[in-house]
Amino acid sequence: MDFGVHLPLIDFGSNPFSLQHLLDYAELAEQLGYQALSVNDHMLFSRPWLDGPTALAAVLPKTGHMTLATTLALPTVRGPVALAKSLAAIDLLSGGRLIVGVGPGSSARDYAAVGIPFEERWKRLDESIQALRVLWSKDALPFKGQFYNTEGIALEPRPAQQAGIPLWLGSWGSVAGLRRVANLADGWLASGYNTTPQEFAQAWIDLRANLQSVGKDPASFPNAVATMWFYVTDNRAEAQRMLEQVLSPMLKRPVDVLGDRLPIGSAEECAEKLAPYRAAGAQRIFLWPLGDDLKQLEMFQKKVVPLLPS
Image 1 (cartoon, rainbow, N blue to C red):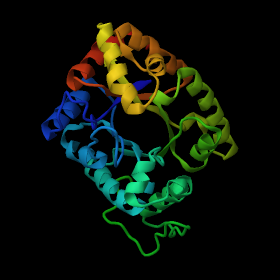
Image 2: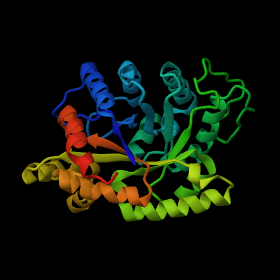
Image 3: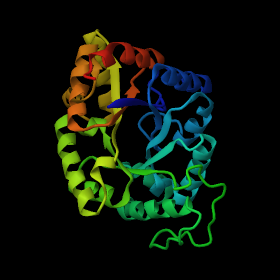
Image 4: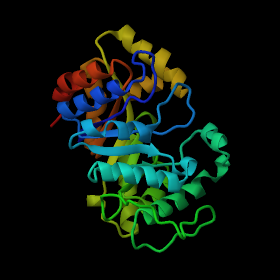
C-alpha cells in the first residue's frame, strides 16, 4: 500500500488560493515520495472549491514522475466531450501519467447548476464512460446512446496513452456500484470517509467475484481509497476542532463517525486507523490535509509512515 495526495482545492481558511502554493505543494509531495497527485470535482460546494482539471494542469511542471488522477471527475455534469478534451490534454502534456476516476457525484446542486436532472445521473454515467473511451480512441466506432452521441466527433490531439486513458470508477461499495465497476471500469476508487477497513475488505471480496463473473482478472485490477482527510497533531483540542468546526459542518456527517474513520489526531492514532487498510487489500490511499498543507504532508511521511507495517 502506498500513498497519494489530493491537491488542496478547498478553502479551509488557512491557505488562500494561489498558484505558488499549489506548485509548492506538488513539488513537496513529489520530493517526499508520494506516488500520486489527484484532484476532485465539484461545481458548487459548502466551501470555495478550486476547479480540479485547471489546477492539475497548472502544477504539471512540478509533478515529477507522480501518477496523476481525478478522484473523481464528473462527466455527467461537465459533459463527456468537454471533459475528454481537457483530460486528453493533461495526459498528453504529462507524458501519459493520467488515470481518470469518474463518478456521478452526490450533489443535486451541481446538476441543477448545469440544467441536468439529478435522477438521470446513473444512466448518464454509464453512457459517459462509453463515450469517453470512444473519444480517446482513434479507431473505435461511434457511441450512440440516449444522452450522448460521438458520431462525427474526432477530438485531437489524442492522449499520450495509445490504449486510452485508464478509467476508474468510484463506488462506496453498494451491490449495484460494485457491479458497475466490474462491468465498466479499469479500477475502483473507494471513499475514505464513507467506508471502514472492514467494509472495504468485504467490498473488495465482492468486487473480485464480480470481476471473475465478467471475465476480468481480479489479480491485476487496481484499487485506491480517495478523499482520506487527515491531520496529524498531538493536541487533542486541535484534532477535535478539525472534526467539529471543519469536517462535520462541511460533510454534514456526525463528528463521532468521522472521528472513528479518519486519521485525525496523533501519529499513533493516524497509523492505527490506516494500518488495517493494508490487510484489507487497499493498494493506495489518497490523503487530503485539513490545513497547514505543506507541514502536514511532511509530518505524515516522517511521523505516521514509519509506524505503518511495511
